[in-house]
Image 1 (cartoon, helix red, strand yellow):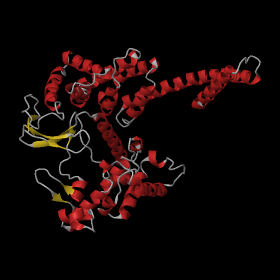
Image 2 (spheres, rainbow, N blue to C red):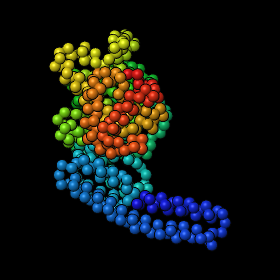
Image 3 (cartoon, rainbow, N blue to C red):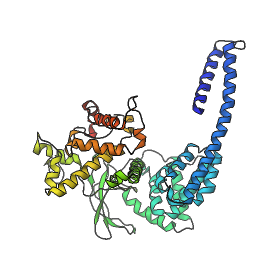
Image 4 (cartoon, rainbow, N blue to C red):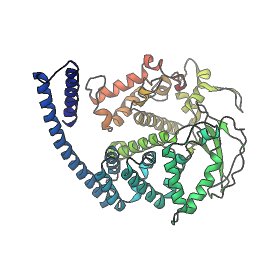
Length: 458
């Protein structure tokens, strides 16, 4: 109703402006009617806005009470933060957050640290919001430095690549993050030494760019988790050529990680948050919990955790060209025309029991990961993603079409955001929407319009 009133009032004001341009409107009956109706709408909007603010403050207060009283409803922190961000200009909301959030355990804000840090700024036009935001982040950093500082450090050094290449300037958001780091470093808390050590450990990993030689210096920092870096790195595919480095720990073990230059890791982190929320929803439901349906996540802390024990599906199917091991033939070459992903399980797991277990795990993984990315944000890319998820013939060949439908339906039925939507202007049942998504994902017309780097032929 509030939005409708606003819309009607804008239309009326536009009509009155057009009538004014035609000449004297003092005796125009239609103009006077519009003017009177506009005044009535303004008064109603004022009353509705006052009621809206009252209900908003009541909602914020009750969410805070809910989060203070226990840990059962911690997911409500997302709703509280959403209300706060959407009404950040209201001083009453900021005062309520500032007064009450000191009594909410700071760890409850950790899943939202990227969103909180992204709104740091040096603007004085919204001082109360920035002051409250800084207090929330500072408290989380002091209480949980290893879960918070890497995020603020990444933001503070977000322009290092462009600075090294002599392009670009630091934004006010980055300066705000630097001010936060400086405050934590010089403050009288137990986190100051941690900040210094993390800054030292951060420096060796931020000087990668396309002009850098492929030799790395030994890590000179005293950070206790890593002893050194290996002397060479590999390039991964992609526009910005991310680097695969190996960190040698104090236990002598090498752990691969991915370094992205000139790229915003917050997008990766937000997607991991989405996957985490999907996992929470899957864990809450008895049927999906019984089937152990989960999306595998990876850590992001300035670097990206490398998922060990995995192989890109494109590498298995198509093979590799060049590199230290030379050219290798993929499954397409070895088994054509029967180029099926199912051969992977036959090659790697000859034992029938293990083969069944791994193939079932693959089917579950495809289903849950497909649901995790079915939010259609790819449609706004320069080259739109015309399919909701990857369900090409090679993906299906690793399982059975019957399993695809059953697993997809079981997962889709739990995710209300998608199931309560409308597809192509038509209200669909659960089976109907499942079939619609599967057909979209497999449609050759959609696949043919995808960005080549997406490799729709796999």
